[in-house]
Length: 208
Image (cartoon, rainbow, N blue to C red; front, side, top):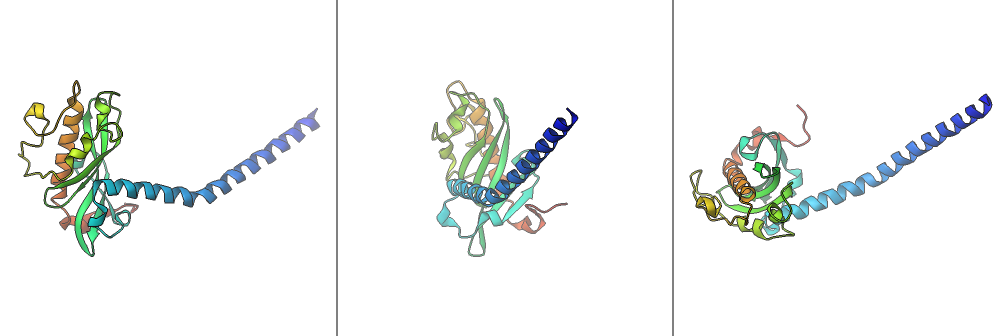
């Protein structure tokens, strides 16, 4: 009996070791492919918020981590876009903290003069059939930010129509678009402070 248990124990140990080794090998073989696909998807999203013909660098290689309340609480990444050596705009991660069902994560492209070039929602928990119209696959509402200029913090046009602004709200769901309009405005104002403090920003991947 004891001999049988030992035999089974050794068999299980060998099987576990082989499974662990196989998992490690598969992970190592697919790591590069997964990273390439992730980078490609990110690039495709970048090109939706900033026209690809407007820059010629790789924004993924010009990434910085910032902490600024205009982008939302916590850390956010920004990606500098350049034409030649000249910075022409920025792609920013931002958070609208006051969505109807919680925080809404955004990717925003803007230049340094107050013009928003594009916006996409990357994560949300808004109500299906109401607040989810912020998704491009459901509605083109989010494309209405492209080309819109922000004339300072007191620009009253940057509000939903119910609040006297220029942006449509959704029937039965004003909170969601209001949260996004305000977040995009704040991010656009932040972009106007760049790229001067670029040397003071922390590159992505750099540890304290």
